[in-house]
Length: 376
Image (cartoon, rainbow, N blue to C red):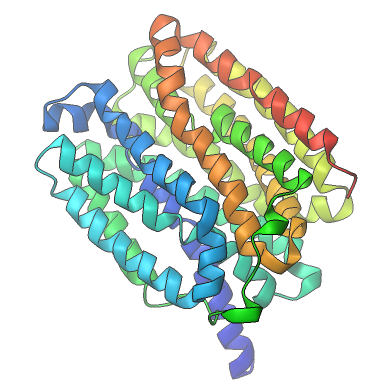
């Protein structure tokens, strides 16, 4: 293996590992919401706002972060975001009250908005073209890994002190700052344009992205509450139960990438949305920890197929501004995640099973949007 090949593999590896930071930082609070609330003197409902305040700036800034990051340079942009992540995570770990804690969660979300789309966009410049679809699948697997280990780390931390979970996030971000992705600034005439982002395919992908997160990937907080309130599981056990959703995506991401190469990203996305909806609706019918684990893991497998398909479709939508396209669609994806706690918690408190049925039903919009796209 020559030095050039080694450098490329290191760059690709750093992108894959960086893919897990956002899900780790965002989801680590899911199994520890009651403990955070008790420690900071607020209700679980108030501590659950930590999910929303992370996702709102994360989603909002991505409307522009991909294009700005391409103009500023991926390396400089992502390095700065990693360093902000370190500061925000440590400040959250030592937050004396809910106000400081929520403010730091918002800062973490803002920083993550400048990492995820630029890392994924950079893959197309690093890997060979014939391996891009499979590489997107591996990237999705790494995102799923972050999503998987987030509740596990959070559950373990909650058993002693939830603050250790944020220390772990800060350490991860600090290590990633040692290996930012390549990418020089693109000023002047080389700067990516905004106008191609305003198109019918981008609108359809944005709708599908919004409900794909609202109806599946944003639900670990709800599943955690169901596991503890209705099944009587401890926080650390709940973290293990939630692990299945992300592990399924982590294991199957590359497989889905190869499948999409042979079939169609659009139809794979439709199938993934249909199957995901069925399993999400079934979560509220589970009566034991093992049943919940099986159903939630199956939902994760199907949601992973939907996610890989969506990312592949988005990367092709605006070839001259992949970072901008990915960031805009991601903004809508995580806007769905930000609204999920606000909208679904009242239904959960009314009737737990109803909240999962409502979440699953929104995936019909993803199916319709993907069907409306031209065949790829």
